[in-house]
Image (tube, rainbow, N blue to C red; front, side, top):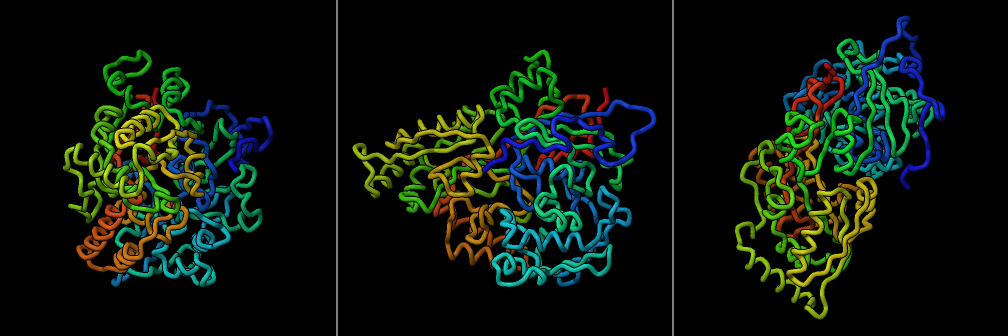
Length: 540
């Protein structure tokens, strides 16, 4: 059940001074703290990197914890807690040297053991980490997560306090990029072993990143304060962050207009033309940002529920969707119709496969869809009917209404059900749906990051519980392939299988939309849409 009734703060009803919250002496001369108010997409389920999976959670976690690698100001991987690394000639062993001055916010040194402990913890079946499969490239990781080996067998060890060695199952070209993801972040071993899962409460948490959690009021605010023990604290210019969980992007726009927010991660697509034309007196055209985003929005089918167990039904619904109408008429901010799960531009993955009906005229697609439904026994007198779940915001609502009308053309009745983002994805992870909207944002620049969500061993990330032995085999072969061209071909063959089976129906490749006040400096639009607060500053 979602946490909706508890106030997580150091003292109920109290807003403590930042220095006091961090157990540091107050400055002799009082200074007005520099505060950044960030709209976030949803209420977090958890701020534990091993318990979270949404970008709205990763935004906050990435400000608190620093992995071996981190997101640079342009969204590209750069050194984080590690000051250097080396790779063995066979590509299997990575040796990381941690920064000598890295510590937790309580002054306890950050050590290689914290990383080893974190890897063991996320893979421990008792943790039930949603994203555990993301770290399967590490030797013995999958066997540990499947309870076939003890956590002590993980392919990671501390050579000394500041030297970490990680051994992989096979050479993994994207491993360094993967280390930017929060699943690979360290957790404070000395705190977790003391208080367990309560380590992320404000009164317990210690961090190694630029900011520390000092308050979490559910459905209101997550407040972070600058960590003076962060290794680069002298260059961190914002003192406090207030993350505001707003899932309705129209409300985000209105609060931005009212001056209650400094930067957002979304706004209604239909407002873009008006924003760029200066149609809102409170918003400068330069403050509306739209940028290509390495993400795919798609329809997710629950392949364990009849009749969506049959690929013909899934294909029929996909055929009936006019993706160009969605991108050009319903949205209209640069989204591109999608006919594959993997978006264009992924490293070492050019000319990937697409749905075979990509260039068919719509009439042919509609005729084929009706024929497939008829084969399944669905007729005008006995239509296919189901509930379509979608994330609540004005854009998703318009998409859902458009899909409902498109499916009506082939005699399908879709009832619409909306919920906020966190509730929606919890329903997907528990298979409490028939057909639903979903999206995947690249964790790292590799096609595997999109395709792994359909592997049978990807756990809760495989929302529809799709299973195909040939697909799994090809993905496994790709994971062990040394030659990049051969690996790419294996991944393309796997994607072709899922495109034929249609466990998901790609809709469009996304763009990032943000509203950023001109006085917020250091914001660089990038394809992964990461904007860590440590790199931002406010200049009025």
